[in-house]
Image (cartoon, rainbow, N blue to C red; front, side, top):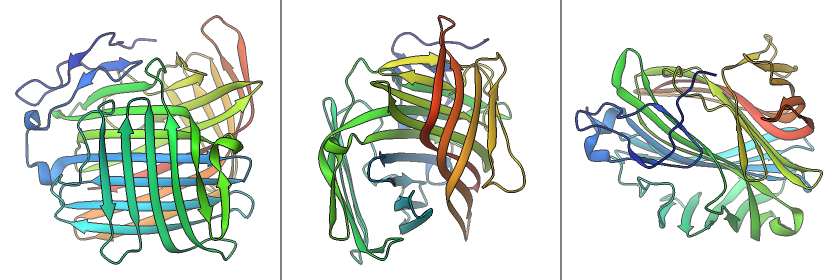
Length: 350
């Protein structure tokens, strides 16, 4: 595995806008400054926080998107019913957001971001205080797959400072001032709070709900396709997690491929997804070192296509289960048996 690990805090960008050091880290060591980014920020700089919350006992995921592309802010609340195999979503857009949506420049600093749709159809609040991430959202008119109306959440996720996450800083070979900074936190526990679906309230901490965070900041090139998969769950008393991704930027110095056992990260090298024309059939996922051999079985599609003015986004996300074997650093096998997660293929012109 020829990858460069960053082991201490470092500046992300030089003053000319290029990456100071490409690589990956077990903690968010990269210090990001917007004023070092070169180019028209309202056009090229992309920032987002994305949470996926799994209540395996109740049989659903909630996916929350809070993003600012400069020329527009895109916000969404999605509900995925694993029992019925259906997903629904509420979207909102704020034109000319120009990175004034409240997203911070660090995933570790205390702070908050709030968005309220002018028509009241969607509200999102993300708060970071110490080891807790407090999430509040409301989509009062969203009709769920079972016919109930309204989706409301208010809960906290626990992320202790020792918990390892996968962090990468990469650039594009064709434009070294285009960069991607990303942290994926997999397997955060819900320690209090609820999600209410219509009149039914699920206690997330009692259900053992878990969450995944995708925290991204970057100056992107115009058109890209990415492949991403993630999963989490409790098996034999341990929180297991998975993050696999590739398809854009130069990953020769760092990939985001890793699996997690409780708070510990196990790094993987290059990974590829194998799938057919029917994306609802099994996918195969393997790495280049013989440490990863998984089958992803989709059960619920969540797809969308958005094409307005300068934005084209074709998203194909599938929720389902992962089964197979991973090899730990000591050579011992880790068996996944129906670990809940998702895999996606996304093509963007943005």
